[in-house]
Image (cartoon, rainbow, N blue to C red):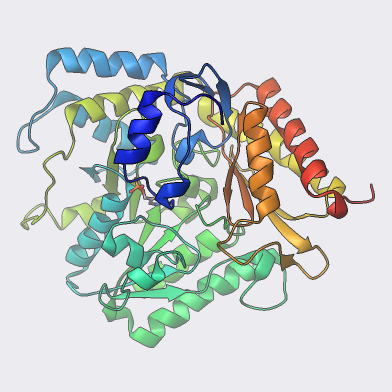
Length: 449
Ligand SMILES: Cc1ncc(COP(=O)(O)O)c(C=O)c1O
């Protein structure tokens, strides 16, 4: 890495950074950004191919969002949730409109984890099952609070969480490339995963289960379920009278080519509750939300809601949210994500023909795709045991940074999730760089064609 600023040295000694061993933290200080790029204090510029934590869907410093925050800051920075607030009302109205949750209600949180915790809380209260079970799945991520670590099927945090105490059961994942249901097509894997949830509900007793909580499409753990999965899961939960919570924290706001990923399945995919964060403000300010269907919300019309957060529906964050939703709409960014996601998927599939190290390419419904790297494409032997990152992949990422492109990895996965405002030449250029870096770092695994 290049010249270190005093801010970097101070930060290295004082801040506890997430998801890292502290003495390995050595990142440059970022001081600015514009569109799909961010800039460091030592004068370098990086194309952001992961939207940071898959959250800067509008790119960095979207002018309309920044201006909306400034305008709201001039008027009113904070008012408690007990009082009314214009940006809060407007954002709730917009979210209900974009999701078609007519007559529903929105509860605002600070981010994704607390949105998921509240979604479960609401589902339990609405069902009258205070200790109702939650069915989540392996290879999922719902947050890093204690409850959401327990919901998550994430081996990194499993030892520190207690799903039993949180009344959580984990289902097998719709992971078609390594199907836990044995041989079959991708579509069959999706259907079997939904049937498996049905069996779990039957085993526990439908009256014991308050909710099924699942990611719809993209996710930190790199699973993109087959198309057959979500509508089948919806059908299973409807039959069982169990509420379906769609965790759209990552998949929402165009990331998967729709406002919300379930919309790809039309009404057949509509959940009872959905959780949002990340793209909700394009990460310009922290904000999460739980969107409840009219039916679920009805329960709270005459029943006390025993919950709240000091910063619930913070006016600055909601103003950022309103501007963000308007920016997605006015820039036609949802359709743009769908189109560029297709371009990205085609290029990645071509790349797979050239590099044997690419075992699987998935996603591409919008600007989210996953490359799963393998040691042997025939046997599908993983390049490293999950969740370890293969050293050559780490070297590839470092070379990418040298060339001014920031790629994200999780274990043996490369996650591609650029801002929706990325230009096509930048997208194509960064994938050409990735192609060259795969050839350099995985030469033995280069395919014949
Ligand atoms: C699907 C999903 N749910 C929940 C979360 C947690 O959100 P937050 O980090 O805002 O608490 C994340 C974060 O990556 C996520 O990807």
